[in-house]
Length: 207
Ligand SMILES: N[C@@H](CCC(=O)N[C@@H](CS)C(=O)NCC(=O)O)C(=O)O
Image 1: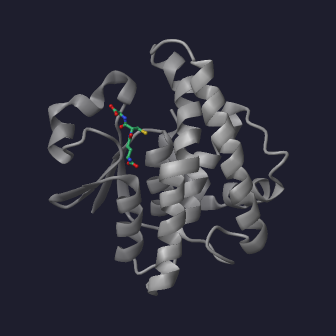
Image 2: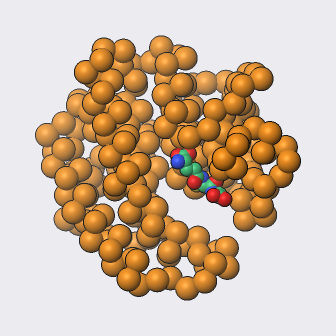
């Protein structure tokens, strides 16, 4: 039995989207980061890094959202993470691009504009937001071009990279970040938003 321990933010959502898209049988345990539940003894037994998400698989557990998405798709033998080396590398390259670049800047904006006030962590820093917005705009243009050519991130079909990226890009809604200049990103976002797996995953974290 699989048990995912997570919160409602981007990193957990990537893994919930993949769990639902694959149709896995799993249990979800909500870890309220605002209440410090990730600092409990029970949670620290699951992960040495104290961050959500964590996937428990019997006596084992896995942290890092990307590792969890890959593990799940491998375990299910899913084409969402193709076996062929080059196709697999293309999925990895986009997941890494989102972790290190576009997703990083969207997370910065999310932290500055949403989490800081919710968690009482001080004022939004406009300088940090300006830098993140500039990089996000440059990198959204790259993704827009890619999606114009391919439809989904790695080609004509969905992969775990799309679910991974979606968890970041959907934050443009709460951030009130306009996608008017990125019609292909907007179209891709709409295609993913309309999937039942996405709706089911969002239900799991609804509070
Ligand atoms: N690179 C990690 C990041 C995990 C992460 O930063 N999780 C956040 C929630 S989205 C967390 O647990 N923060 C609590 C903390 O750092 O104390 C992943 O992709 O899973």
